Structures are given as structure tokens and as C-alpha cells.
Length: 336
Image (cartoon, rainbow, N blue to C red; front, side):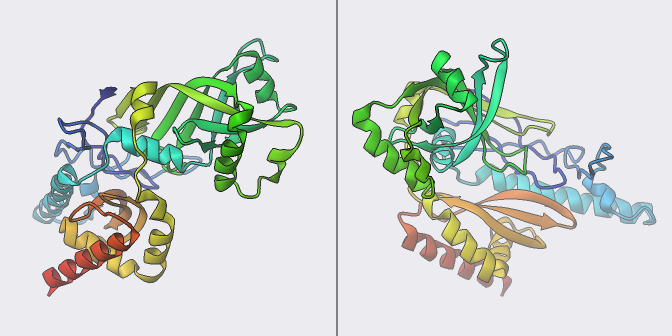
């Protein structure tokens, strides 16, 4: 695996920014680093018609404050993000390759790029649904009438891009480079089952003009931190990607986070406060895996993403509930 590690992404765009990035230590776990530079801790205010350089977080202090009050507010803001930085450096995460394979495994839609037959070989992009087979290779159900199908049958080289959070360009983006090849007849039933598990209403896969194509990965790349001052990226060979495992707990993300956000949002906020020691104004769960959960949180008008680790690895869905209860009780005890 080749990777380019970068310090913690501290720029906070108008939607949200993950305070995280990918890098490896000796045991393959994700770690984070950050420079405690408040000039990187910036709040971006943008609209469709006007974009300008964001002011420092410390600029949230009122311009009418006295110099001593302003300095105190700046120090307080810096202290808060220093606390966040220290917390995120130690927060347990999945190894990069495991997270990439997991996110791709549960993905359903991406951007397919092919070499256009109609436009003299220029790259052509299409929004496509996909699923992954048991090895993690993306599967497409394509019609012979589709332009991208004609492109692939003429030139199998392609790429598939998946954004973990399409509304947050700083979040994880995965690109699979490979060759799209027809699925052998003996594998069709298994592939059909896998595809319909992700797209249960795709009855059209049985139409006569449809076929399944498998994108056999050659290189799998990832990047995070786009549109911030610092980037994190890396790539895996097809052998590394094939050997990687899908996290077994991520499949429970939707039911657990939906329940927590609907019925226990205050508990989530309390757990984040207990874990980070930062008095966030709100927090709601985005997803979870064996080692912890990710949240979108807010503090004094600034929104960002945080990693909240479990006390230990979760073994199953029931264990996730046990861990959340333990974390909530511990957070309440700190308050009391």
C-alpha cells in the first residue's frame, strides 16, 4: 500500500469537516495528527454567489470586546480545539484498507468513467448503481442500449468513484481502477443475489438486454481532506484489497444511528461531551463500526465531524448496545 499522510484536517467548511485523516502506524491502525495552529481552525461561510476566505474560529469573539476579553476568547477557542486534537489522535479507528473496503461494500451508487466510443476516446462519466461480490469487486447491471455498456465492451478499462458523504467533499472518496468483464454464467445466480440484496427493486436485471459486469480492481485509491489545507491519501493493490476484511459491525449503522438520533440525541451529545471533554452544542451519529462511531457535532456555531471510540471492540449488535450504555453511564457519572 502506498499512502500519503497529512496532519489533522482542521479546516471546517460550511457543511461539516471530519477532524481526521488516514495514516498507518506499525500495527495498521488509523491514527491522527494535528498542528495546533488556530489559523487552520477556520470557519468557512459560503453561498452559491459569494465565497471568501473564512475567518479564524477565534474571530467568533465580538469585535466590541476589549483586548483582554478578545485574547481570553481566542485562548479558550484554541484550548477547545487542542482538546479535540488530543482526543482524535488517540481515537481508535479501522485500518484504512478495512474502512475503504467496508464503505465500498455497503455502497450503492457511484460515478462510472469509461473511454467514450462516440467522443473519440475522451473520458465519459455515468451515474450507476452497483453492488459488490464476495471478494469486494463492484458489480454493474447494464443494458446493451446504454452508452457506457458499449464503451466497456469496446474497452474494459474504467474507474468507479464513490463518495462516503456526497454533501461533504472533505470526507472519504474511493476510486476503483479496473477492468469491467462479463460475469460467467456459472456465477450469475450468486451475483444476481448480491446485486438484489443492495437493490431489491431492480426487477429489470432479468430483462433480456441486461447483463452483469464485474469490475476487477487493479488499484484502489482513497483521498480525504479535499478542500482543506491538508490532504490524506493512499492506494492498495488488487491483492491487498482482496485480502482485506469488511467490518462486521458497520452493517448495523443505519438502524442504530437512526434510533439514537431519533430517540436519544441528548444521550449522544452527552457521550461526546464525556469522551472529548468538549461541551458540544449538539451531536448526532453518522455511522459506526467495531471500534467506535462517527458524529457530526457543533460548538459555538462551528460544525465538524468527530470520531468517538468504544471502550473496547464491539463483537455484535447486542454488544454495541452494551457499550453505548456503558459510555452513557460513564458520561453521566462525570457530570454528576
